[in-house]
Structure formats: C-alpha cells, structure tokens
Image 1 (cartoon, one colour):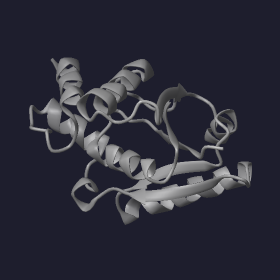
Image 2 (image 1 turned 120 degrees about the horizontal axis):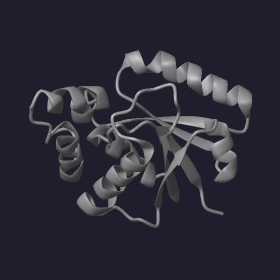
Image 3 (image 1 turned 180 degrees about the vertical axis):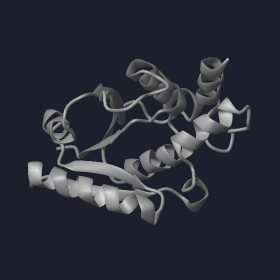
Length: 164
C-alpha cells in the first residue's frame, strides 16, 4: 500500500519554499497530493484553476518532477475530508519561522480533533527559502522587482501577465 500525503495550501503563487517542502516530502512518501485551497474566505490573485496550472508548470515543466508521484488538485472541503478521499492519514505543512508555528500548531490540533487518525508533519524548507512568502512575492512583482530567487520562470511569467 502506497503512502500518500496531503499538502494543502493556497499556493498563490507557488514559491521555492513550497517547492522545497514538496521535494523533501517526495523522499518520505510515495505520492503527494498538492491540494490548492478554493475557500472563499480569502482574496486570491489567481483563481484555483490558474493556481493549479501555475503549479503544474512549475513542478513538471520548469523542474521536471515526477508526474506519477504528484497530484495537483483544488479543494473546498475540510482537509480531513480530503485525507479520507485520498486514503491518507498525513497532512504536510511547511514552516518558515517561529511565527508560523502557533497557527500551524492550532490547525494541526483541530485536524486531530476532527480525525484522530491524522498526523500533521511539519517540514522546513532550506534556510535560503524560509523567508519567502507568496504575499511578498506578489508585492515585489507588483512594484516591478526581481523575484527570480523566489519562484520558477513559468510562475514569474504568470505573475507578470497578471500585473501588466
């Protein structure tokens, strides 16, 4: 039986920090479901179908990661329901800094209360990627800054098209 992990997030847009977590998780699990949140409580730059396409281009075209090991989907349900659907008891979360921990700790606790068979695994991206956030990437590109150290070429292209 293959071990599947769910990596939920907004990925608006995907960054090298997200990608680092995905690459590390591929060493630990047979399959990763990159689950793009389609919740309505947030204002997104890209809609979920755009984000899925951006992620696929970044992972499979720019970085040539294994398509058989990564599934990119959108979801608007509870993450615990998504785990049931994909027969997974693992939720992956990336941590950048101590400031992320309190929110992530609460989220992991709530998910555990919803389904006590689910474990949340926290992975840290490498040091050079820990400061990257989608919010800052969008801000920098909006102000015509250089973001090539923060995300892939195809993602940069999508961002530039959005802001032109």
